[in-house]
Image (cartoon, rainbow, N blue to C red):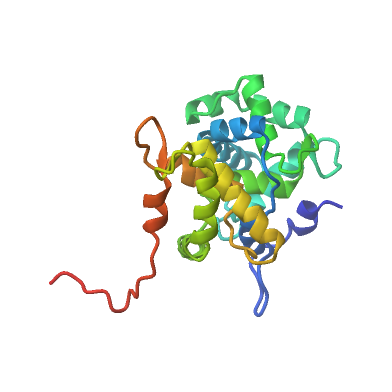
Length: 261
């Protein structure tokens, strides 16, 4: 039976055990993805700002309809609530949401989506589904949905800080290959590239180092690279100063940093 059904009865971990929901929450940030095509890159750039309101709407719906009254967040962490929603909307019971099931589920939440800031027209819902469809087979499993909706919102403060430190390390220790990849797109050799070329270069480095076993589970995947590219300042005609970005990473001994008197 689907993994969601097998684990929905789990709540708090017993002594010496790990909660399956804590494990899933951490596992999803390293879900492997393949290189994106031009159309997929366009969808990803469009989808990023829609994920938070989409996740908020789905979670609110699940809490209202599917979580027992009086339950606490510690009893029902985000991955478990999402699993209940996924299971409820998987009308065929095959462990997947195909595109039509995904769209039908969200169409019933159209007013809430619009209020949260996420478009609810059918084409937009299908684009969101294609974004979450990491494998690209026209349907999404629970892990793909979790990966799409929980990158930023569901992480606890401690794990978020740990993950950010890991991401910083992944960039710092791979500055040379990243610079080499970015220079391939920097035809004028002025330290500037377009946001699209910036993402392509970092994805190429990630793919190469992952294949060689050097990157491991850095967490620097598609979503993280898209977020970095989206939020970096633009210079000139909308370019990214990749040299300034790479030079901003350095190791600091926080225990010995002088503090203002």
